[in-house]
Length: 132
Image 1: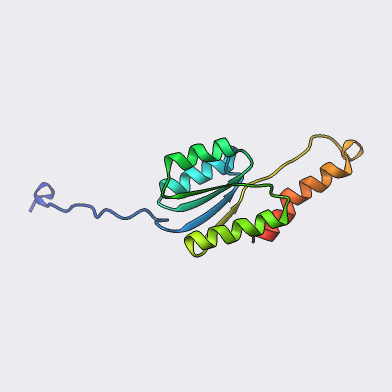
Image 2 (image 1 turned 30 degrees about the vertical axis):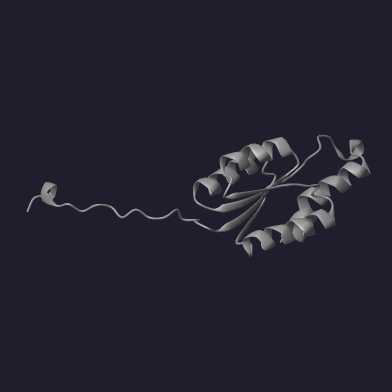
């Protein structure tokens, strides 16, 4: 029997992350946005967390049944808790958390204001801790 006479067809697999719930912080731009699109394109339901409502809604319009847009201040503990509760209420849990939001200030110790340092620690350390 020749190979051309076999009619073996590949089995179509469902998207790997089908119906998984993914939370992406920093989803409105950069790496966070790219990660959000990747999960959406692989079947996941994605909670898009970020600052720019217009950018988040643009993604949400492309994937209306798979996305949840949440604009928030990541330094506000109440906003973080409300966001987690909203996601769990809508999709009954969270499977994957991508902490992609981050900030950095150019300069050295001598030229960094304490308020800038506090904000940077809040976004880069405290927020991932609280969400996790």
